Length: 288
Image 1 (cartoon, rainbow, N blue to C red):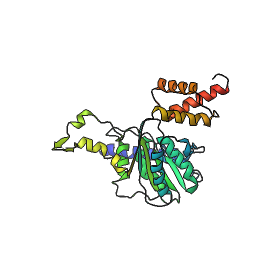
Image 2: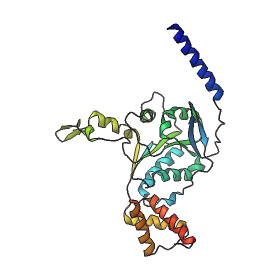
Image 3: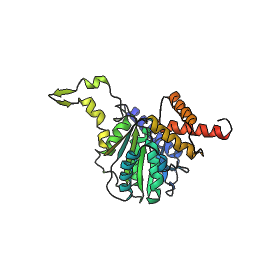
Image 4: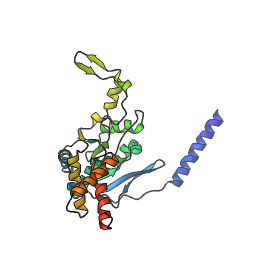
């Protein structure tokens, strides 16, 4: 047994030595950038500058004025050094959740706002990211896009701890903004509801349900986004057609845009912009 332990100890030291040899020290990020992403290779993570961030203007987002007002107010408080909440944006695909966060960065970057994109499988590194930026003068939003988890996902538990539950307080210059198509971010099954208790008119969810809503409850601000109706969809189509240089939307163009949405099974803002891009391109090449 002693020889085996010695062999394991030597192997561990050899692996540590090889890791030091293969490790690449990445340069300090360019803090003049406004957008970053967390990158990781093996056990080494670093913040990487994004040279050409998506510059979405806030007025490009149509028919979500109420959602814009709530999240912009929270962001403005944060940028100015006042108290603000972590934000969870939920709802249908293509309704502007991610675009809104990018547009707020575009508007408030000159005021010191910065964005760090963190992928779901890197959420276990949130404490490491905060450790790097907590003394920076800028205000950072950690952006987690399109989140969904299984109940045993390590990223789910890591995010819960960072939001509320760690002994170490999160830095005052950091907020987390996350988007998800699910309000509670993990699947809910009929079986979970079997443990729900009824006491008179009161309903007491079972432990499984309580666990599944516990993550979303840790976000101070919830903002829901809804599918667009036909009138809203056409307003968004008109905006994007004007953006691509087509000022007038004729009945024929309306009908074509509605057919485009029908074929894709969605009247989302994303579908509207895709139609406008396609139509404008065909018009300019003489094929529209």
